[in-house]
Length: 373
Image (cartoon, rainbow, N blue to C red; front, side, top):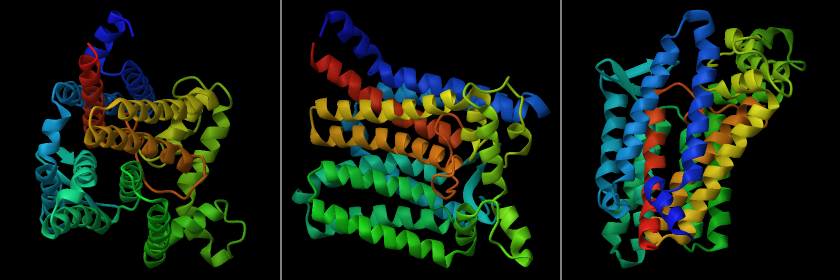
C-alpha cells in the first residue's frame, strides 16, 4: 500500500464507507424534499438537513475517539439506554404515537431510546463475546441481563423491527466470535418461534401480516374489506410508487407517491426513492448498504484485536441490515416492520445514531491505517 493511500485512510478511515454514507444522505435530502417539500414547503427538508449536520458532528467526533476507550463505557452506555426506555415508558416524557410509546420529548426535540441502544449494545456485545471466558458467574449474569433488559423494554414499546435487527446483528457477532454452528441454528430456531409468538399475540402485527399476504384484499369477505384495505394501504401505495418510477424514475416531486404514501418520509421512503429515481436508484440504495457491510467486514478482518473486529462487524451489519430490510419491506418481499432507512428517512435520532456507528467504523479504519505506517 502506498504512502498516499495510507495518508488518505488515516484521514478518512475508510473512503468507501464515507462515500456510501454521503450518497445515502444526498438521496435522503432529495427524497425528503420530494415527499414533503413539493406540497408543504421546505420545513421537512430543513429538519432533515439539521439532523444530518448533527450526524456529521457526532460522526467526526467519534472518528477521533479510540474504540478501545468506547468499549470501557459499553456498560454505562447500555445502562443509559435502559434508563431512557424507562423514562419513555413510565413517565410523562414518553410520547404516544399510533398507540405506542417509542420516543420521549426533550425540549423542542424527540429522542428514540431504540436508536441510542444500537451503538450501546454493539459495544456491550463485543465486550461480552471477547471477555466472557474470563468472567465469573455474576459478571456473566449482569452483562447478559443488561442486554436482555434493554431488548425487552424495546419490545414493550411495541417495536419489533429494531429488536430483530439488533438480535440478528448480535447473532452475527456471536458467530464470528467463534460460536458453534449448532448453537447458532438453535438460536435461529428459538428466534423464529419467538417472532411468530410475538406476531400472534399482537392483533396489529397479525393484521399487517395478513394484509401483506393479500395486499389487494382479493380473498377478504365484504365485512372485513375496510379493515384489510386500511391495513394494506401503505403497501399498495408503495407498489404503485415503485411501478410508476419504472427504470429511471420521474421528475423530482412528480408521481403519486409523495402525496399518497403513508409515512413516505419515514418507514416507506424507499418507495419514494424508487419512484423518483427508478429501479436504478432503488438498486443503488441496496448496493450502498451492501458496500457498508462489506467494508465493515474488511475492517474486522484487519482489526488488531478481537473486540475491535466485533465492533466493526456490529456497526456495519446493524446499518446495512436495517437498510436492506427496509427495502425488502417497501417492495413487499417481507411483512411491514416499521423500520427507517438509515441516513435517508426523516428522524434526528436515527440520523445521529447512524452517524455514531459510521464514526466508530471510521475510527477503527484510522487506527488500522496508522498502525501500518
